[in-house]
Length: 417
Ligand code: AMP
Image (cartoon, rainbow, N blue to C red; front, side, top):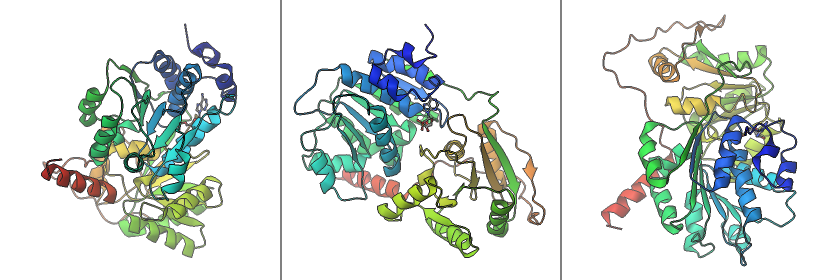
């Protein structure tokens, strides 16, 4: 049987109604939904923007609908994500897809950066679905606001990120709170070999689904590389915003300071820009992303905080003002554009200094992009010749939070906990 219609996927009528605006299941949905419905573990690797959230939410809702109700509610599905913004987005998808289900499904999002009290209140009487970042979830468990001992399904969205060092200790603590018998679902666009072993420890007889990007897809992301001198990147960015007529652009930088600085420079030239990074208050983060999504802000200058999972409809272009640290981060950054079958453009600024690093990213991505030069911004600095044996591509840049988490884990180990 082929799964090229939603109605062939054995989903209840209220769920079919919720996806009626979609023509057909995407390949990852067609492949993953039947496996998740069967109850087994799944590791799904599929391109950015290919509908992965719906691929795990629909069958989990189907499980919930067909399962016996429990009073008080027990947590049926626990979805762990790396950022607060992604938690809000996934919660909204669960809400959206469950709108026509007649029974009330209680969905709670548990994230840091905001007061814990409303989340404790929301968890009174239990919850059916929790979408959480691990740190806040553990805080809530410690305060006895929630128990996880009867979770049926665990989802790690952006699974490779959830399994990497930054979250390892918190994730291990969460796993200890879950029942042995449960379904594990791991979804991501990237799954580097370094996290494979950790995934295998977690999974049992998992079905592995790998969906390759369609090489013939003409709407796929058009990738460009522009050679420019380091100190000409700000004026070049302004020039491109003006000449290319971008209505909205997401600009990635390496540091929080750079995000503030580049956004400030754009504003000084009359361009409506905001920065977005982990040092802003949660309110400022939420407002910046919301203003960007509803087009009241033209340019969002962000760190890799915005690289994972965030779904911005009709975002035509992203710019790597600073290059990402790794090929994996490159995949996630450019994947903020060209989503759900739309066209997108991803431009990387390549300076003399970052040229060798970009060559390594290209190699990992099996790319060979022509180096463009923009009239008036021709580079004068020459890339250094490659150093024999020079260090390879770097891993993901550790965030301040990652470093704190690692330090806390080290301390715990030293204390023998
Ligand atoms: P995701 O990869 O889950 O973030 O989804 C990316 C985008 O694809 C979202 O805007 C979804 O609303 C959209 N989407 C999900 N499923 C489908 C589908 N079957 N057909 C078209 N678009 C979809």
